[in-house]
Image 1 (cartoon, rainbow, N blue to C red):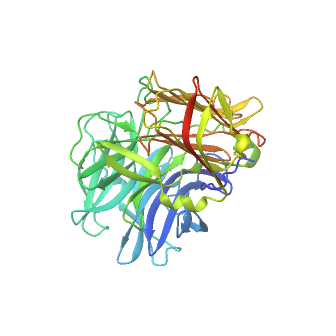
Image 2: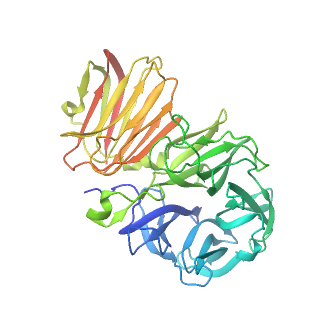
Image 3: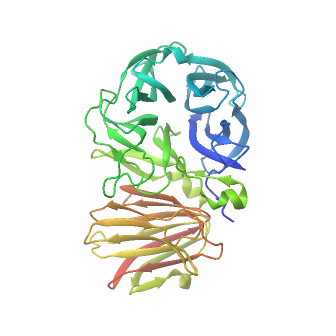
Length: 451
């Protein structure tokens, strides 16, 4: 009933971080953290899929399993890079001996993109500088100015989070270069990443332990970015990537057009009270691929253009008046898997609510309050699962772009200025869509696509 139709989800067990994202030899490869044995965090493998379009995915054999001394307690997160027409996977080997943690940054290589030969650690546990604990993980490897760089999430010995960088000329021999973040970002930073678009650059990472501050940092852990090059970062101008409930450990890669694309984990560490576990023996999905641009010191996220291939039946409404409320059922607009785009006038100055997956006593509500300049996603009445409201500041609302899957919603506002992501678990009969307003207003255009 809740298994997502067009998001990547595990066949069973637990899915978490996306890993090794890459476009290689004409195909997209996605790996993800997977415990195939239970819906809990343990025995992490790398599941593997490939696609020519990021829409139609083919499941491949497990790429990495925790079978060696250097990864026996889990093949943790990492990244992929191409060299000499071979696919290199870098990952963290997690080892616990009598509750003592060891961390190894490991390498596996493939010639065919299916079978991977483990080469073992390239950064050993003993190579971790004395300033850091053994919470040292999630290598993101890329090439910059002719040199290979490896970003790692780390924890200082004073139990504060940071990101550090190693360098290499050959992907085998790595040398510690420097710490990137000098400020305090909670007690641990995970899944670092780095993007460039033109002259603009951004460090992306997932800090743990930030304190809630009004609308900000309301989830257990956060994922966001700082607009900056790989120089030492002291000023905390950290911006959350997603304003919703479940979004963590995102990773980027370049698509076939050399554009930055992001996929995240639609989940949150240490939160496993999801009804899909008990009812269907699986939990969590990956987000849809998002195209990233940096504009005026902000990352904009929009659905990747290839997602248009999902579209089937199309309904377009123009100049639709909304007085009190509009039930879109009258236009045969309803469902549990669809794309909905609401185009508003550039000078729209009213309030709007959109109820998704509406049924008897159920609804998931997106709203915008013009006076308070506030956008919200409310899942207090979404059915089973976690509840709550998430909010963000938004000066004006011009476009609402929504993807609804069987147990998830992703909402892109104003061509990616803000994004809300969350899991919802409504009854299968809750299929309605309603739009409400406090005053009479006209919607210039509504697009609806069934999937």
